[in-house]
Amino acid sequence: MTKYSQAGDFSESDIMFEEATKAVKDRRYKEAIEIFEVLAENNEADAQYNIALLLKSGRGRPQSYKDALKWGWLALLGKIEAANKLVDEIKDIVPDPTLRIIRNEVKNYIKTRAESGNTVAISQMGDYFLQVPEEPQYKEAYLWFVVASAFQLENAIARRDKVQKELEGKDIINLQSKALEVFTKISETMK
Image 1: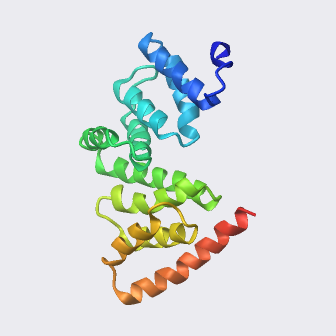
Image 2: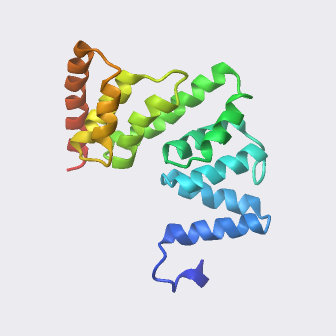
């Protein structure tokens, strides 16, 4: 890492990502996966996608479709479009009971971050309920987009309004009340 430390335009995560990419090119997959994992845990979608690729192929660690799918879904929620194909390929292999477990792990991973005030995760919660479950869960997505809109997160209002069209009036009122509770709890953690 020291050879990059003089480049003031690069953050530490940029330098780490560059090191991991170089490790892949040099076929040092174990080193690459360790670096990508640190970055992936910090919600860096590019690293999540790369670790998913390595785990799917079994480079640097034993092949794990379960872990690859988890990171692939997180990359997809991080707006990495190529993750869509990767996720679809793995979903075709993984049995339904395991898919349910992984979906739950992804939800809990994002929810923990969202509830601690991570604004990226707040938006990702809405996207999760539209993209990851077998069928879109509009009520849950709406709740999180209402919260994201209150925090004035990018595109949250448009996404909230789009999902609202899928709901009935009585559900909207109940979900708005629940969203206020969630918003208040998250706001408390951000103080």
